[in-house]
Image 1 (cartoon, rainbow, N blue to C red):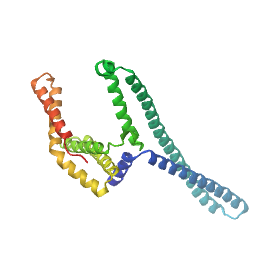
Image 2: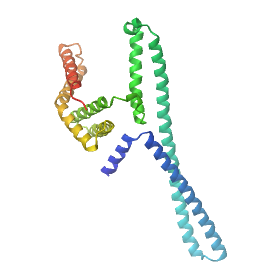
Image 3: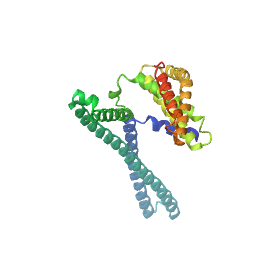
Image 4: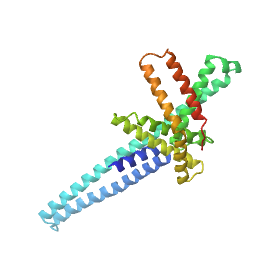
Length: 275
């Protein structure tokens, strides 16, 4: 059962446009096979009636065969309905993702054009310039994530090393946070699932950088070990910062000190070696 759940999770994590199409094609093929099978079963039913009328089949034989064919047809039509529903879901997933990407691309074009139309002074010093710059960057980052899910990595060309290090950092950060989740079964399960997701994504980034599976695994393990102490320190600082916020003491010297320590730790982490 655990293996089934893991395989399902891995499928959900690695699902992309190519796999989505393959899955949809497989369902369509299954639908066609079921349609043929249903037609054959109905033909058998007609032949059975004909055999009973001509006396080829006895009443008892007819009853047994009719019941078996009825159950067979019911199972086939039920499977056909499930396949239709599955195809509708796959189509919806694909169209919604595509719609989101197209919408964001259009918005990115508008914000980029608006930003480029500003003067240098407006871009660097006006609130409008800063807001447009932040929005454009946010849209671009979101597009990278969405396009990555459908194997469109044009926006991320040349950033595999950066992607790899960030993915491993997130994985190690989740591992550090896991130590504080022992009392929450649901949160712990979600944390572990996310760890698996980041590990798979890191392996993919490493593969795109030209590493073999063994090399990718070793690189991930070595990099994770090298940043683990810094990440654990960062997680502890962030937890302390959250505690101070909850206590309503954001204006205290302790809060400002924590903020400085977090910034310094993050800078140290960003300076670590990468793939």
